[in-house]
Image (tube, rainbow, N blue to C red):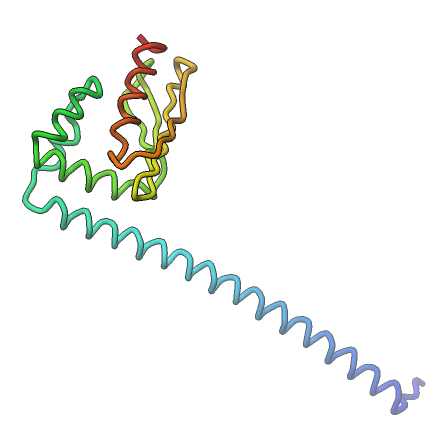
Length: 165
């Protein structure tokens, strides 16, 4: 017969307490990670909705999709539309502001397929990566200009004309 002494009982209780403590700690850590992940997802959803509401406010009363889906073939045409068409300027400004934090723009198809992600830090630092995967060409244009990327558009247009035409 096994004799249970005070020391054996104390060691058993300490081991059991230690195991319960470890399990409790692991459970708390797992729940904390889930809470943090939920907080991140909630914040992402809130940011998206804030951007969407801002975009809707900035384009209120405009027929947005016909303006966005117009084909612009070169920088001169874009700049002319930007200077002369108030609706175009409002929609493009809102559109770029809305999608800026959501990844890259994907445009056209086939050999003309390109990706880009214009970005800036006001009062004038601009960076526009652009690439044509099917053609194997691309560039990253960086400038320090208060012209909100106009110089970048002209440089990208020249690069496209030189290497892709």
